Image (cartoon, rainbow, N blue to C red; front, side, top):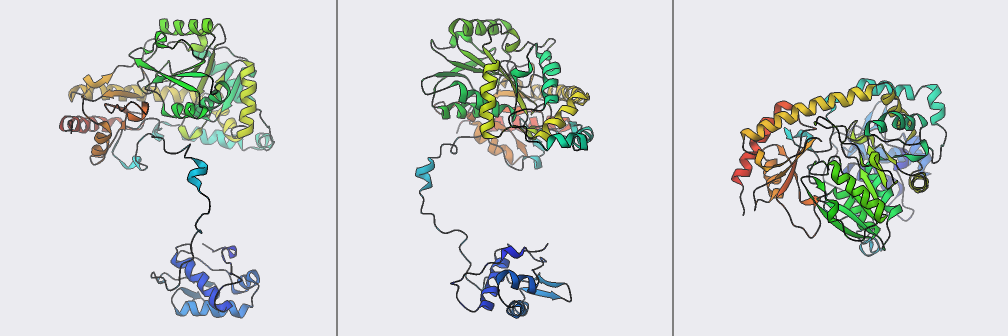
Length: 490
């Protein structure tokens, strides 16, 4: 590693001679670990030119630092940071940043921080039993063909196109595949002008909230619900109403008399994974048509269903144009891809495209084209099929393990998705349970974050099987069951 000459600056009002100032800059860089052991310093000639001093001044400074064991000289190679450089400071360390004269707490108001978030350790991969939701299992992903598609995208013919600034336009190959292959599987027909590519479902939900809601409008969300949606709605300053979810999802009869937008995860409700039946879907659509409100449908994990027949999306049953449909590739491909899509009326898509253009123009063209190739060449279908088989095996193993260890009675039934929503015995704090399980190598997700601020419900937790191999499931469930039995109200 070579230390850039730009790392060296002298204070015109600094104390001491130029030689002493250079020594101080080098020593402070070493003591603060900015200049690691073995790093090569700029040549005396190059540093002298950069600082506007004589070369002999730099050479003398380097020589003194060699004598102090900060540096070593290697023949004609130059000067390097010594492996034995002193660790106890000999010079006063420069303050990294002067105290701010700005009251950031007052100015910023912590509008975007301070929210309760999903609790999971950053190093969750190092735990033997990670029952973590929303993370991909790299062993199930077709890395070789994804790499092939990425290389194809970097070929001369495609790369010439990717170099252009397309402003608000999306990759036509990706839009066409979504239109002709993805949406028909959900019973949805749409024109190209009714589809917009997004940076995942979160980005789509944010745009929908920005366009549809104001301080004078009312939004309904499910309870429990995806915590990111709750935060998005909070920032619109609209009136919000939470509608409790039962074993059949959102009940349309629970909607308030006045509502402008209803957000729902009808296919696999987040986080319970229950599915809204057809009669409720028809009732919700009829209400929207009669009362003039809009439905934002986040088609959560529609690819992972274990029932004999898949329930059509709300958008597929929508004759009045009331539904804004949100889809994502985060679960079927991998979450780091950050690609999703919105399907809605041309009027909505036109406004959403303009809003997106103000923030990020469009998702990266290279990722769009790579995904388009991966989908169109059949790799996506194989990927989804492989994941569905693996998830079904894991779900079967998990169900059997929960029955063996008497946890099955705590599950809330669902026939799809990649997780179980669990209810612990009354009085058991699942946030504490999650902390205790970490010492056993088990990671679970407490359910508190899925409920509103005023609801201190700590009985629920979520167990996912998307990122844990089948062979580890049984032992992980046994450890959870033991902790549940041992942990009682405190």
